[in-house]
Length: 461
Image (tube, rainbow, N blue to C red):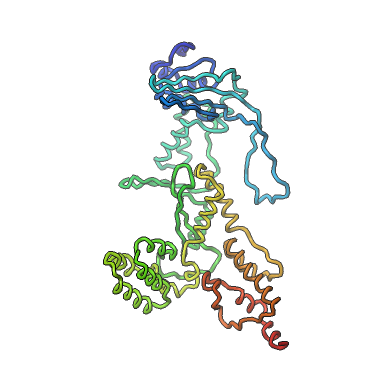
């Protein structure tokens, strides 16, 4: 027999324990009478069962701590969704679902009285009943009670089908929520996810990666950039990204890990605060020969006026110089070209700009796929440039493609001004663009695209 609940009767702990989770959900779905409960009981045993139905509409808080919140049905939608723009290719469209408007306008009012430690839940003014069933709300979102169960089972680190079956069994047999259990199903597995904990440091994290990304990482792992960024999700997780460069032949890189030159200089700005010492160690980092590096780093140590800085350099940078000094990278044009993680930081910056820190982690993954398209997948097109050159440009990220395209277009301006080629015989130029990025500049492109222009120019001048 169901316990009787009258409008003037409080629901104490005894009555609350006798009510099943299904009965509690029905009482908070279409509220026909005012309910009074203890705050702790309401927050722990009532609201998590129905949190998927209601969303906050407005709230007020008094100076004594009392608060009043108005909730509206999650299916409430006042404006009609916009339609898709015409002429957008299918591979560039985001996968979205349109929810109909004007489905339900039910509201409730939840008042919390701190001194009495009670909660009063009632229908908001003359609000009508829901125009849909509780099952329809479960299809849109799962209640927090079930989401908590899934998290508890996921920590045990067994396969997803077993987690689903365990949660379904508990929800049906113990909680009597058959309607909610119907909507529990596995989504298509695009990402492989593993969770791990470091107990002595109280750290818990998880790793997610697409199956195709695993194949690329195994195939092109010889050069991997690693960087982290914060404030990308509402859970305050730091996002660490492994960035690889694919589509190229294999380079036999000798060392396991190398340091980013930009981050080194940032660190030295605070740790090596003596300006002359810092300038000399930066010069040592850019030395092309080991002999030149060793001579300069010894000079740095001998002339450093601050003992703590001298000890810092000896401890952290003398023995592992192959990880940060550029003399150790002269065997690989790729390592000389990629001396920092700036490209990955640009990706993180774009990811942060195009998304919100209030997103969940799954929403962030979806948005990151769009950023990948904008940053890596897009291909530039330049009028009057051979396909052979364009194919080489397309191997770079889109921002680098634009930089190189500007250098190619500058060749035409050189021709308009009557300038001849520079007579380069090697892929080397003293132009600042080449030294800054170690990429072909306008003079190199001029020599490659119009090798005959020099003799033509000399003949008629």
